[in-house]
Image (cartoon, rainbow, N blue to C red; front, side, top):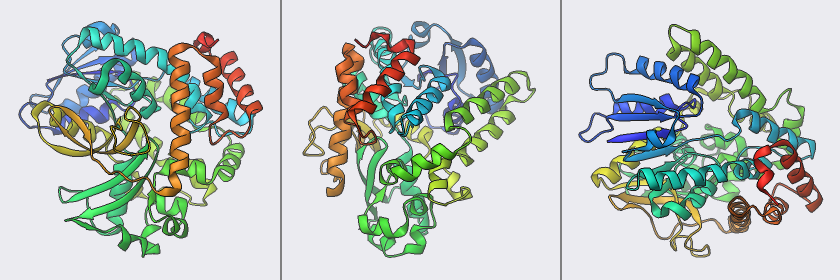
Length: 446
């Protein structure tokens, strides 16, 4: 199989390649095409992947391309993982948000809308290019905001685009570990919501739901990151395990205050770190070691201001284990390519799964995947207290998509004014004006 990674010069590419190297099953990926606009980063990334492949028999071949059409030709699967405006754009989003007293975070905050408005014209062009150059390819979307971007790309690609995120399975793994269990074929995770806005409502092991058992154990709840972030009392009151990104909603005032006190924003920190990484990796005899050190630093500082607002301190070693989005992606590819029926939590059109959302709304729910694609499992349950938030955020996503596809400034303003983390129309207007003045890419909004 041939895999094309659009945004292949991105920092997380070695995670995907490592998963490909671990896959020794028949019919595995044998060719990887990295597509990126930055030729220097592509060369450095190719060296990192070569170091990973050293000593591995029959490692997937790697080619690099700055011409997307060339890189897409012959692809069986396409990963979309692009960042329009780079980390500089994310840094501007966070500062614009803070200047107006709102959270600027890149997916759930003001930055999510701004980032999407910059990204949508580019991903729609990419969707058209994929349809032309690799019409039979399946597209796995990592580009944030993942649910929103997946829904927009589905206008062109239909059900052949599927969004993935490792937050749900990462939460489930940490919760199971608190019970002394592991994710395996005997475990079924009940989860429902939107990307970065969902809840684990069941942890069934051999058909028995173990979540009630966990909810009765405050010490076990607070043994893992989400438990400490929200607190055992609040999680027990909810009766469900919230995705970590819901902390921005449930503790908006505290997170904003922590952001305001921080010496630099998350994006500014990452921008400085990444600039050092690319400079060091470009000249290092062992760029893989440089990447591994930078990755550990990223993981240990993840959501630092949220942890500060909750008084959590440093991350525990157990919390550094992600959900393994790269392993989810490999499982998804194998299920489709070889009709290996798998249960995965994915971003897909609702198709009646959550009965009060329309069929085309992309949701994050458990799916059965086979050669025909991903099929959401009927009956996904959003807790009653979450219905209003999910409905409102889906409206914000839809208005953002409308703005991105039609150039409608009124739609962009509606998206911002109705955002749960933005508290007035006047602030929404100021945020939009600030974004348009900062980003030339938003000149299309009229």
